[in-house]
Length: 216
Image (cartoon, rainbow, N blue to C red; front, side, top):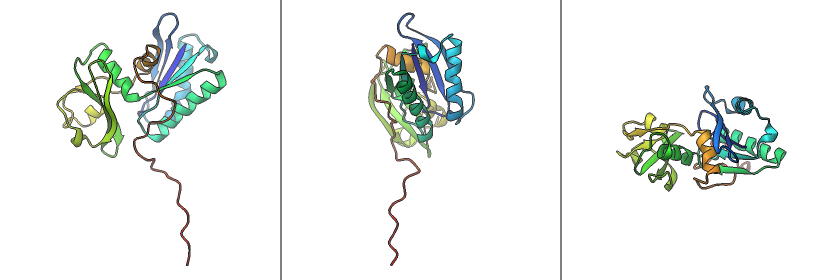
């Protein structure tokens, strides 16, 4: 049983995927409150396990979104993934969170049918942006850019299209990464796999202070 979760956006998404028998997502939940990754991830994992009638020992692998995204949210997800991996002695696979959005946009119920982009909120009036073909394969990126610098009339999935409609007028779903599609990306080898390390595209706001200046 593959446990998948993504904390690269203001919301937490968790799913269970039966990679051995049914080859399907058997349970999935998303948080209802923004920016409370630390408080919501563990309860959501417990809930999807309960929904499927399973216990943590039934999990045989972990899939985790590696961003790009805010430092705090990514840290919560990646530390949790590594902890599960260590305690249960199971593998953990990282996937770019933009790739997860792209796979659902390309292969989901309403396929985009052409080359497109994924844009998610990078704050500071910027977006994380990557380009994809009609099958959800990444062509370039991800980058962090100002929306006006990447304005396009082509389809754009992700919440960036909703935040900046003047720059991305052709919005296409989904707006957020789904843990169910994250699980599919790993189970069906649909996306590039990464080590469970955060994909940062800019330096953290909080940095260690430099050496103190010498007093003369």
